[in-house]
Length: 567
Image 1 (tube, rainbow, N blue to C red):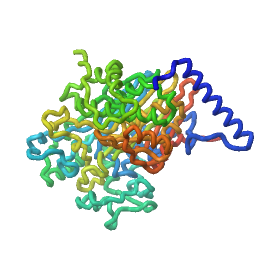
Image 2 (cartoon, rainbow, N blue to C red):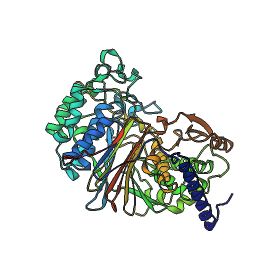
Image 3 (spheres, helix red, strand yellow):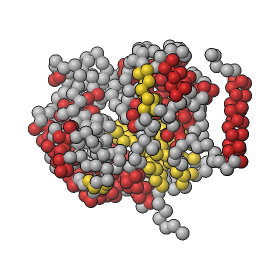
């Protein structure tokens, strides 16, 4: 059916709002509550808010705010704590990306703290193999996290490393209770490495929810960083232990690979979606797929179709396939490949690609397009402070417990991000010395008028498609911050085929209609982690009010800054 004329759409939307108002009035008249679109309330405060997937980490960040720190100080404290309390997902052995909104200047800054491949790795090194190893020493790339912390604090922070790492050190030294969704059940990766088994399998088994877990070796590493700064990790004792581990396992990582590494400030990329500007980190990350997906979605009147209707979901699913096909074809480290960012983000290109979507039938394969040439496992957390400074940060080991390797006495795993490289010489993402791989982890940010939102949603290749759905929830369907992060989602983690995973909270009638269009649905449990957990904070500059939201798909919470001297 063709889209309704604009005048008709206005009438239909007005009728819907009137009917909803009548329903609410009738319910109130009979003593019933107004229908609620989310299970948790939005956190609102004049002071700062920190949102993470673990309350202890949120508290660590909120405490820094209460002690006079800003959002940047708070996010480093929260991230360091997350590396302690959720060591399988993230930690100082992994990479980091961040978007920082600086309230005084009104500018948004991007930070790429993703590490590069060892200088000794090349396609020739893996001769005879078709894919990169997913674990072990040859999947390890230089960790960028600590360099990222240093860059954030040096440019925007007001606190020192000893200040912001204090809570994480205390959690590692004194222990913390394992929470429900963090408890690690699959221990095969950890058992393969004696250091990993000793660190993360106390008593020879994974700790269970409610048990106290301590990691004194990680406390030592964090103290080294607090005392000596990033050089402790990239040049001094921690670096020496990382290199010793690589040499023992016949890896190629060298002292120079660590010592020469630096995080990089980058210009965020963006698109305008129905009046909202949405930002992502530029390649080598996958964030451009979220923006191209939004450009495709913008060609459809999603608000007229209805939230999580079959027509809206079909358009989004098909847009995802096209956006990801382009991402896989073109995105790589821009220092090694020409990535057509401007062409991929062009609105005319989006209209051309959107024309390939059949409104009645799902496509099993999406081919990459030809954009016009340009001229010449994971944790997400966010914070906002009283002044309106905001940080959107994501950090990861890639796979659960990364490579599965723990350097001697260090208490953290080295990431396996090298698994994302290609061994195909024709791929722009083919492995090369000191090249960064195509990256899955992406922080996001959006703004319109006096409103700013920092947000992110986790889980590998789920992230760009989840970002686009969150934006649609805010922009098209006018959901509040918490409802937008909680709303049922779909995900397609494969890059071909008709398979789609969708939460059971999407109605059976809608799922049946999607099946009739050719989608092969796998129905997920409510609030499934497969569609990723997320966090979000919002700043209303006109009112001077902050909001926070935390996804019930994770253990976390959005926690306001404590009032220092309550009346």
